[in-house]
Image (cartoon, rainbow, N blue to C red; front, side, top):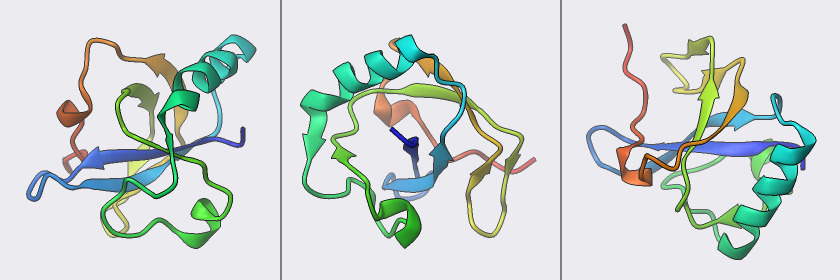
Length: 106
């Protein structure tokens, strides 16, 4: 696995939109767990409203967004609405996908 594509719900429309990806912070156990949890959720089409950059979507395996993961990041870009410098922290079973919103700007 090269990484996970990340999404959050647009604060105005509620649409699930692409906000970046994460490719670091995974332990071997985390990778095993990710494959186990995401495998049954696989689907043929992207769950994102709007596009995903071609280089990110090229080899993607899409899943139905039913789980929430936590990432840390250093920047959320104002123009592209993308998280930068991300690292995986783990699953958030206490959150529902609908709870995840695009970050607000300070």
